[in-house]
Image (tube, rainbow, N blue to C red; front, side, top):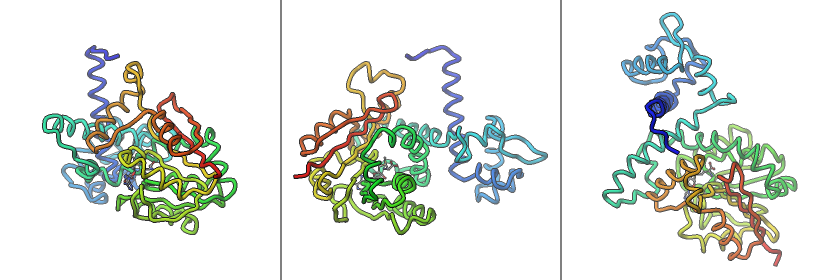
Length: 340
Ligand SMILES: C[S@@+](CC[C@H](N)C(=O)[O-])C[C@H]1O[C@@H](n2cnc3c(N)ncnc32)[C@H](O)[C@@H]1O
């Protein structure tokens, strides 16, 4: 539980400040520049990254103080710790966690305002801070792709069965398409369509698909998750962290998915498994999820325990199995459409 020792409070402050420094550098590609072109003077770094020169110099100083940068002559280079934490692909990459911390800060401030006014900013909550837009997809990818590859894919046979037979996949709320790209890399004859409602994400997804040379097998189209502009039959319909965005229209959604699945096809919903006991609410690993639920409330959404998704799929006529993974934080619910 909360330890109110001065050292603990100091540690929290340093954690928040570390995320702030890292986030500013990530948002403007400063770490990437230094990785590719460093060492650079603060002035040269600011010029190449297109940021304000005076603020750029201040940022270098702060990033040096926090140990992300080392001094080299009169310039700066990434330190070993900076390279490990902030260059994508490193096993210790923490960029996704830093973006997440800043999002929690934004949500907390907005919640404090909404608590007084009762406002519901809706899905536009993210767009209020445009700086998050290009970082949101990569954050989800950094946080969840390793988990998918290490825990979810090995546990869930439905992905492997669809992949193994070169099946057709529909991913609803596909974001930057990292999931479809991972599946297509794992299963070489699988094809897929992603549906997404956020314009910038659609552009990112299609750019990503093309750059990976997967344009003949994957695409992302604009549309609403509940009435996707694509016809079935699909062997697999997936929803990763998107079902809670449309839970208020869940009855229509389940019918829409059933109509697009082939007989025996699978519907796999992966969402946070929200605690449904007091003890669960206080579990350290679940506390950030509980705070995240404030952000969902401000968007008109709600996180729910996996068992609610199980009940929903059963009442929609699916045969259901559930996998609770990552210490029970993640719920992956698999529904099989009955053959008749
Ligand atoms: C938390 S993100 C998850 C993205 C992606 N599945 C992933 O795992 O990285 C939820 C996504 O659902 C999309 N979304 C939410 N409601 C939607 C709707 N009604 N129609 C289409 N997309 C929607 C959002 O734009 C966002 O990209």
